[in-house]
Structure formats: structure tokens, C-alpha cells
Length: 371
Image 1: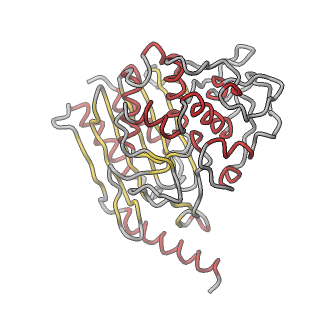
Image 2: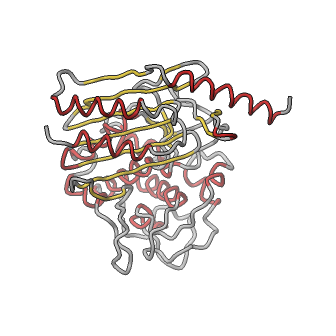
Image 3: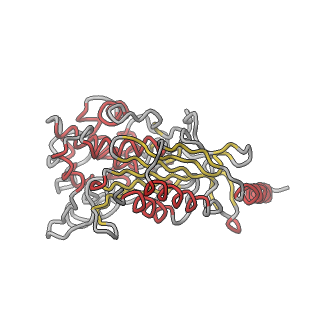
């Protein structure tokens, strides 16, 4: 049997396995005791919403936090389809661009401490990044206004990186695509460079800096780099859909060079705790939240609709809403914050499926209602 045929048969077997399991009640859940009728309704509607779409995701998990605690979390489907290992609240998933929100938070925390000037040229903290004839600032990088070119994802998977600076040769020699500050342009390399800035300003390695500034203060105990050489202990198997939309395990990938652009794995509960800690002022001062949450503007005054690490908008009820989401082979992630309701919602899946953003926004709207 050829290698291609073998892969197709493996995908077919996984597809049959998923279809057989999708109808089962595969769920692990935590609920805060004695929920109010409004909260009970939100839990029931959210549970049905995610249970009904198991055919889209082999496994998914949700965590909802409000005020000062997690009020509901649940896992649906399987972290490992072939071994029938269900998703639990401890299952770790690739979070891709949600990593940007973590990186931007550390950046603003360092700014509060006087260790970084958001409007200074990045070479002050990363001397090895070449001058581009126009100054590029940390604020611009965090807002995707730096003009750093976007690259195909596989360009950042071509090697292994021990620190953010190791990834700079992939893009440092490329010309800017836009003058800094003139246009919003998503750029993963921009956030890789920002990771190097954070590490340089912090005076330690990037992960240790985030542990100190973000993970420990937010009680995030299950968030780490997605390192193929040292896989996370409770990592969900990443899946992809290919031939005839059949499911197969994602090819082994080295995401070590993505850093704060998308290089972390986490749990829904960790990300919900992060959102609450941010809204409470535990990570940055509350008076600094507008630095993160206010839409940035181009040089001509046009709003980008994005803050630093967050997309800024309003929900159907007119409440301000912050969203960050990511998609990568073997992972999909969404975090939603509703400051008015002191609400944080995180939804993760182990396939780059469709509609997860819509599900997360619907769940946030349900739990944001006054009780």
C-alpha cells in the first residue's frame, strides 16, 4: 500500500470513529453551585450549542468566568479520537493568535514599570534588528501597524528557535510592506519581533518574563510554549481535515519560532482566568486598560478597530466587547471579554474548524445578560 493510500485509510478510520462518537454524551463539566435561573439558562443553551456541533470539532472546551471566579467549564468530544480520551477542563490546545493578547499584556505591564517606552524604536531593545529608514515602535508592532511583512506560516516552522531572536533572520532582511503607522496589516513576524522586544526590556528570556508578568499573577498553571521537542503533558491531539473533508492527525509541526505571535498552548480555564485578571486590574493597572483596549489609529486618524492584542467592538446589546481568536493546523481558539459584565469566555478546539468564533460570541452574549 502506498503512503498516500495509507494516509487516506487512516483518515477514513478517524472519520468513522468521530461519527460514531459524535452522538455520544461525551462531556465533562464543572458548574458553580446553585446557579441563578438566568445562568442556568445560559449554561443549558451553551451546552446544547456545543454538543450540536461535535461533527465540526473532534474535541472542544469552554470556560466562562464572571466577577472573580469560573462559573462554568466543560469539555466536549475527544482529545484523542482513536484512544477515546475525552476532553476535560485540563486539556491543552494550541491557541495561536490568542498568544498576542498575552504578549501585549506583558508589554503594557513593562511600560507601567518604566522598563519600556512604547513609542521608542524597537532597536533600543533589540539592537540586532536592522534599521528600516523609518522608526518602528513597540506600540505599532502590538497594533499590527509596524509594516512588517506577513509571511506564510510554514516560514516560521522551518527551524527550531530557542529565543525570539533566533527567528529574526527569517524576516529581518525583508523590506517593509507599508510605512509604519499608515495601515493595519496583520503580521505574525511583527509579534515575533515584539516578543524579542519584551524579552529585551524584561532582562530575561521571553517565557520567564510572561510567567512573571502574566501567568503567575493570573493563576495560569497550564499555559506553555508549543514545543514539539517537549510536548505539553495534557495536549489534545491536533487534527486537520483533508481528502473528502476526512479527519486525520495534523502533521508534526515545530511552532517554537512563533513565540508571542501564536506559539502557546493553554486551557480554556487558564484563558478565562487571564481575562478576569486583566479586567480586575491584577495584570496591568485599570487605568492602563485603555492602552490595550482602545482602537488604534493610523497616521491619518483612521481607526483600525484593533487595540493592542485585541479586536474592539460592541455586542448586539451595545456592550463593549474585546475579542482575540486564532486558527492554525490542529487548533482553533477564541477569547471574549465583556468588561461591563465582568465576563471572560474562552472556547478552544483541536481542529481548524469553522464557526468557533460565532459559538464563542453567542455564549458570551448569553452569560453577559444581567441576573
